Image (cartoon, one colour):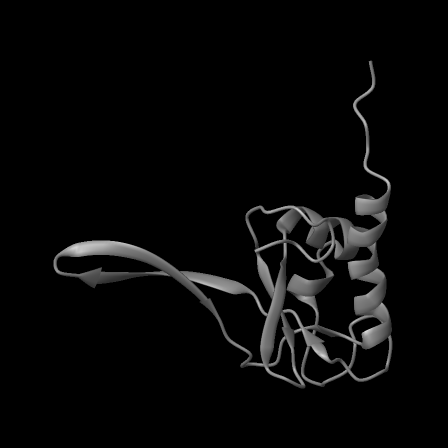
Length: 115
């Protein structure tokens, strides 16, 4: 899956979930998470349904992916999943649009290597 901010296929740390339709719409890679939010998403108190950047309703949840290991037929297999419980950080439509707009701008204006 592609990062909603940079558009690259890469490792991911957070899912991006539309809470109205309960559908996964993308991921947020660790680099973009750090660039956009610093340590805020890891350390904040997310007990309400508000956007992490304003007091509007958060419609785009950013739950963390958690790795775990299962044993199947004597083999250990690594899996990952996310959970919406307990409450996780979320973005309102405006701030999600600003975050995902970065992808559109980069696609329209790709960076060329310098000679």
